[in-house]
Image (cartoon, rainbow, N blue to C red; front, side):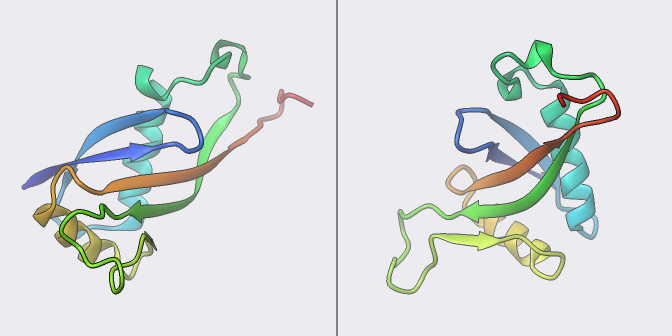
Amino acid sequence: MAIPVMFTLPPSNRHEIILLDTSSKPSLKSLNKQITSTIATSPNCSEFMGKYKSTDAVEQINEIRVHWAESGRDRKVWPEYTIVTEENVGAILEVLKGSVGRDVLEIKGVVVCGTHGWW
């Protein structure tokens, strides 16, 4: 089974919706790989002035966290954010299955310059 999940690239409005396969054992590595490949090709993720970015530059994800929706949850006990780790990625996907379209993955990444970088 696959579930649709939106991710954003704060602080901009760059975003995309992907289908996460939940039938196999989820891993942070596979999630990271799917998101980085989507960032590289999606028009919704393109950066302003991105056409001038070095072709050697590589997107690398530093952190993935879930921004939990407020609706239907008690904010006194439910957190605003949860950092996705290898240990909790399976549990987070199970929660996302039950609230499809409400919660958003926030991607904190950096551009790592290659040998012909911006310096």
